[in-house]
Amino acid sequence: MADETYAGGLWCSQVLAQLSDYLDNELPAPSRAKIEAHLSECDRCFRFGERFDAILRALCIELRTPEPLTLAEAQRLRHRLLARIFEP
Image: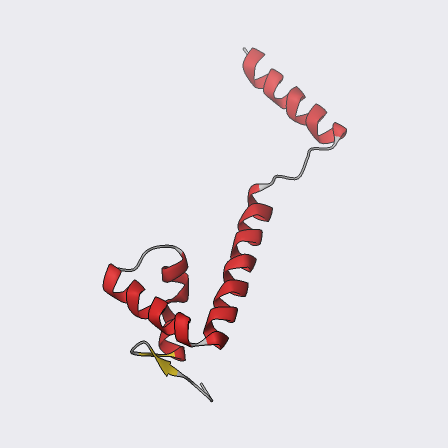
């Protein structure tokens, strides 16, 4: 990565390689501390991390929200379920 910053004992590329695990709280305490030290000194990684986290959170919310069924889909589903329940 061009124009990398070395801060908190890590290069930007090292932080970016671990960013998902950091945001998911899946890193051991020493690794988290190094990333946090880097982020406190490197504005570019800090801003990127904030944007990346916001995008991931928005995506998770979007993927968890199901599309509502149309009336036709709901009727087909109801018909199929009733047929299963009452089939001989």
